[in-house]
Length: 182
Image (cartoon, rainbow, N blue to C red; front, side, top):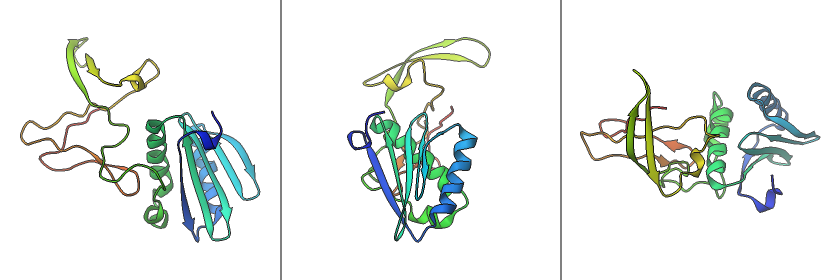
């Protein structure tokens, strides 16, 4: 991975949070999810994941968290993953976590790619092959494990996901919500 200052990076300060507690939590998540510890020293922890890097360091006023990835799409996915893992069951972090210079609130999520289904082929009783066309489908190559096929509702005008203030995708609910199977 390129040096941190040459790739997309976002940061957030978590005032009044304790470095040791957050470090312990992230090391547990790293072990569960196969992240590699790059640096673990006095007041600093850096992890490397399949999508990018995550770091925390102790400051006089709390903890600074940063994430970096090769491209904006991976950065968005990192933001989303960190939000999900760091905020699960921790209302203090959930309320404080807002990425600086991250995703733009109310825009379409950066990992949403608009494409059109151009062909459907039955492969078995519960499997179909879809052929898609779109402007940039490079993220969906051979290495892609899965994706969500967001299908608009037939009953009402479609409602698309947007990015929340904390960087997470907000999915619409109700009659206009799209069907989104994996």
